[in-house]
Length: 201
Image (cartoon, rainbow, N blue to C red; front, side, top):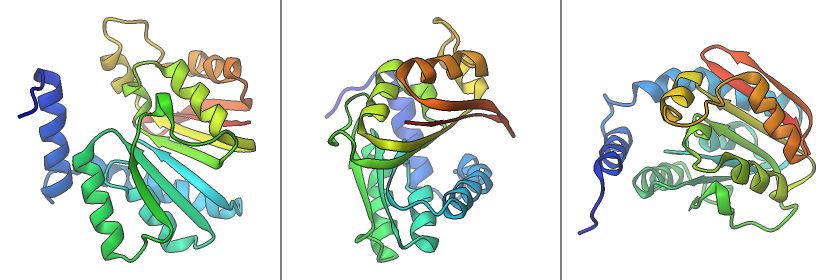
């Protein structure tokens, strides 16, 4: 049996509830409007190729993209095997396996070649990255030239996660962090209850 500390057990059981209890994932339903806006933005910009979803969870964003953008291939990554299992199940039921793949992977060590991803998205996972600089550098590495990164994160979750560390939950710090990595045209600002960061390689 795998031994887990208290916080690992909390995250594990929260993941199981989110994946399999239809009455639990209130947060996911709250994010549905945001997911739809992201899909609309990608479609309006007529983006093509491979979209990477970091912290995909049960794969809601890739599944929405697959429904309306057949010219796009999605890769969803997450560290939680329980959520990925549910994502794969839904993708298979909808017959999207030819355009969506889900991998257990860490943003700090992406299993992709340099210049192989057309755009990257992350919703509510940046606060969980242990080394955010390393994760952002990895996104920069795998993105193609002119590739786009879009990240949304809750400032409250950032603050809670960073309680004993330096708080990066403000637009100025996040903007500088992405610009230092090499991203151009970085925009950072508030959108609903999230901080949104946009940049281009």
